[in-house]
Length: 139
Image 1 (tube, rainbow, N blue to C red):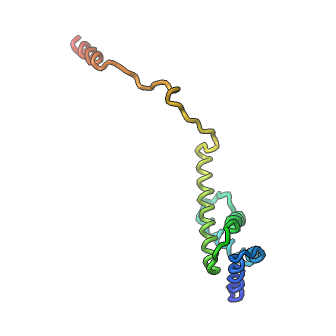
Image 2 (image 1 turned 90 degrees about the horizontal axis):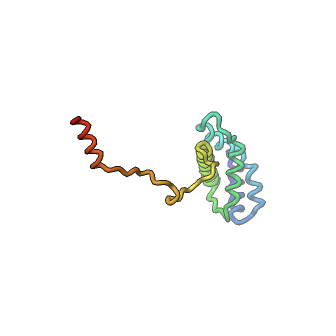
Image 3 (image 1 turned 45 degrees about the horizontal axis):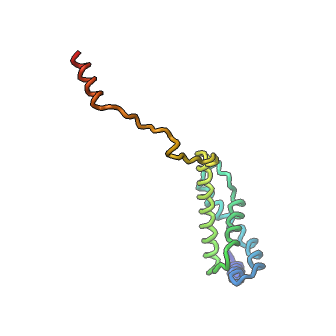
């Protein structure tokens, strides 16, 4: 990345940290391609039929980034590292949701009241059983 671009990103990040929303909005077009590369790299390790695409992953990460109150970005590398970490969390959350749905996550959960459940324990007379067993052997 050219030095001018890197210094521009650092300046926009510093301005965003100071609460400048215009700087935040100006930053995204500048770093979008780099964020897409990071997203593609993360998705490369996922299964082939993954439902998230790199653009959707970048957009979700962006939404999480802008929700932060007064972020303190150190530099371009710090921003991209945080974005990459957010993307990883998004993929993990997506996988968890998929597994939950696969295992009936949408079904209503029922809790059983122990008083309403009939007793499963069958009581029997062990001495009488032994006596029957002895009689059967000697007959």
